[in-house]
Length: 481
Image 1 (cartoon, rainbow, N blue to C red):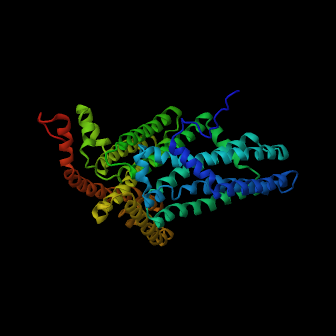
Image 2 (image 1 turned 180 degrees about the vertical axis):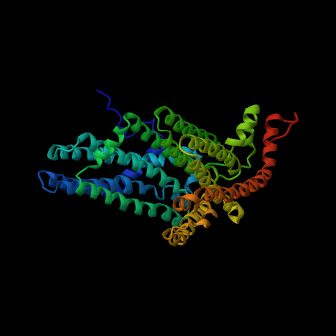
Image 3 (image 1 turned 60 degrees about the vertical axis):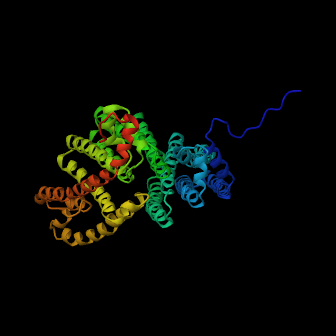
């Protein structure tokens, strides 16, 4: 008799964390309910689109429902992915299985991405049916469906990263406010484009990807891959042990990403666009680098000292902690500022530097108050960012409005880096240069304050660095940096 082959649902090559999360996710009532409801509605809409006069409206509903599921409902499944593990204390048990922090975070994200992929593939027959009934652009609709899935998995990475925060209200504010604003805007755009010109979102995506040939599509995929890596590594840092060297991998990848954007801009003649893209990447990288706690584990520094003088140089840029993160971010700010000034204008380069000073300002505020003793610096950083950029900036905009209506330059906007870009745009032509220079001088105060705090924090970790030096060199003499 022939032996009955063993039935296996997942191959052993998959990470056990991915298998665990995927099994749990597929068995939940939420996934089953979303899948059933989605298909019932899509069947109804597909039947309505066959020869109906309101095909554009039906197509708008079709796109809206698919976008809602792939870009909002599925990513939100990671809202408490890590927070529940932290509250129940099961994260330590997962660490005992020798799963690294990165594999734990990746498993939770990969399970959501796989379920979204399953939903996306199940939608494909309806896209083909709509093409047969209505003569839509099949390639454009498939491209639109793929980009919706891609946007959804990027949002899932963002939400999984935020799920490392125990504060429910903080996660709710950061997640639901942008989703509410962005969701309303996206839905309005889809409905207007469908009812107005009959242009499908698939054609929008197709025109976007074809505008620069295959290079634009590769750029989008590359940016999405980097964004997923950034947020997953940000989350892994929050739960990783103190002896982890995740900062080396993270900062190396971020540096390569920014340099790649610059090189692509020079090779393709789109240096101006790539410069502003690099500035956006820089803002996220600074958030990560400036919210790491100063490491006091000797073995971390020993890993750098054992590589001689190159390791000692790399320590200032890649070692865990916000002190080296400030040096690292200063290097990136210098690179991006020079690039933007070369490819666009000196004024825009100054605005990039002012924006960087605004991020350093938030980090300085975290260090000036008792929040510097927090176990995780990311929550106080987000809170200060919300206070400065939402409350104070909104109040400043209200003060600026009557001055703008009178055609008067709002000179008070040079007081804070967050005010200056808006004040510069609305300033009188003859006052722009003076306002920008005053704002630059005012903004430079904050990196100076952060530098003073960094000197004290670096001194407090000197004992750990000395111990790391002795672990490598013993009693041979010399001292740590």
